[in-house]
Amino acid sequence: MMHKLLFKYGVRLRNPSLYDYLSFLKKSDSWSHKRLIAYQTKKCKEFLEFAYKYSSFYKTTFDDLNFKPSEFKDLEQMKLLPTISKTALIRYNSSIHSDYPFKKVFPALTSGTTGESLEFLKNEEWDSSNRAAMFRGYSWYGVHPADKNGYLWGYNIDPKQALRIKWLDRLQNRFRIFSYNTKEIEYFAKNLKGAGYLHGYSSMIYEVAKLVNRSGLKIDHKLKMIKGTSEMIFDAYQEEVTKAFGLKILSEYGSAESGVIAFECPEGNMHIAMENVIVEEEDGEILVTNLLSKSFPIIRYRLGDMIELADKDFKCSCGRAHPVILNIKGRVGVKIIGKSQEFPGRMIYNVIKNLSIEHGIILNYQARQHMKGVVDLYIEQNEENSEGILEKELKKYFKDEIDFNIFYGKNLHNMEEKLNDFITTIG
Ligand SMILES: [Zn+2]
Image (cartoon, rainbow, N blue to C red; front, side):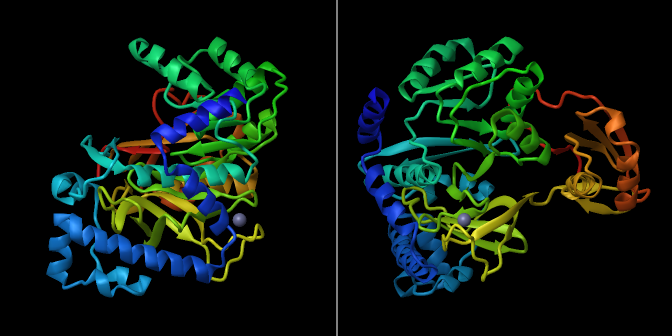
């Protein structure tokens, strides 16, 4: 009770428009596809007009193309506009920022893959609508954001920061692990008693589940939702987490620049939050337009993920008409370099996935390539689990193009950042 009041007070202060967005999103949750498209089209026109008026970058871009946002009437017209990459968002940063006098903005910072970071300002409505989309997802599971929650983000937090983080966590009814050791994980797991939800990197949720299962720790919990972000969720994770908590990890898909793109419904499908974002797929790659990003317009952004959208006629049994992302298939442009040919970075994942489907062998892995034609494959499980089938399957897909060095029984997680399934320093 106290926490809900505190939460409400905090929200009013920081995100005054959040509750309005949330109640709108709860209504539009049951809209027909046609109505959602009409809404999106209208919002998109307003947004493009805004960008044209207040962002010098988009004014020049639209003028060069002779694109008139005032004449926008069909989402197909988005295809007339160029896409934008993170590099461009960094390079043209100041001219992309709009010069509209917003009442309130928040600074945001994300790191790029090449080490460059992207800084931008988020107007309050953008931040609030994004949180609202997240909270709508929570409501599908009967979770209130102010419910007590366990949070698994990076461990090993700088002691100087720890006190401040602990205080912020208290305000948000949140607890976390500060350094990775058995005692802390155990303490964390026990703390889940009375928590409504658990969220964070799925690989870390998995680590906690493993400890719970191995130590035979019985947790009398009432978790309603376990949410994974930012990482792929492997079958082995789901198996372990379900065993530990009786729930599987659901995914929330998004990024700092794009906001929440999709949220998994109780039927297991990731529905696009189309009131906030337009998702296009071009050659397997996702393009995102964030309709509320007025302070720093994000239009047809190359987020860098390969995705698979559900068929247009696909209907989720939950009844929502919001389109579904079936699968996030890894990063764009990542390649495994063989001796004479290249393979998509996703190929090892496919082999491992096949092992699970066809042979019931579940392996956790991380692949690393530092040399042409050679890949080091680290496997968490022990060798007897794979019975030489892994080697055979790899051979089937990669022929003699790649020499695999397979290391079994390895600890994959450094507990500091998210776990990448394929790391390459070449190509
Ligand atoms: Zn659904």
